[in-house]
View: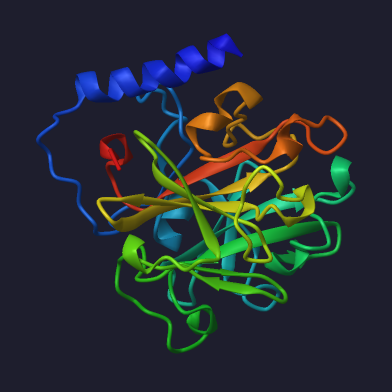
Length: 276
């Protein structure tokens, strides 16, 4: 656990040391990147993803499902469903999904949070849209090349519309801590209660928000499951205090949780300049 603390501390140091401190953080969503990592030069960390269907195809992404099966044309790379890109009917990025297999330990995802997921038979998916979800497969789909103008997490029976300005964040969310190269974290109890040490593991919402300079420019998934993809990060118990103001006690109960899998999703081109 000391190693994890060292690595995270080193990330903070590295970010400050090699980046220009006087560069202004933009608020435009001009990119789509995934996976936080201690080494910003590792090609697997802060990796930009295609934002057009044609670019995805040229880089080896393969259509997994289309508009006749799911909401969008969904693409995966090398069979890895940890990151699935959603393109609209005109081939422009519309959202991002992740796959969660069934039969996981701790009954993840719990009955309480399953409305945020879609049951696709052998597995669940959770999806975030950067445009109106109802427009993705319609003639109303946008042909403009942008990452998007909103963030909506839409499941089978629950939808979360995320505030673009930190000042507008609803009481559903509980503010966590700032971490450089990420942002100010917000977490949630699925019932809208304060997320604290007494939060039930089944109520832990599987996502978090990231704000920098008062603007939403990232978010991520947080799964109570040990998922194998290289895309995921696996923060240990010893570093949770860097992200939560009050750490739910279930994280320290081996009968309720094991290895956590998180995925940071950045909406602009410079997450290394996220200083909250």
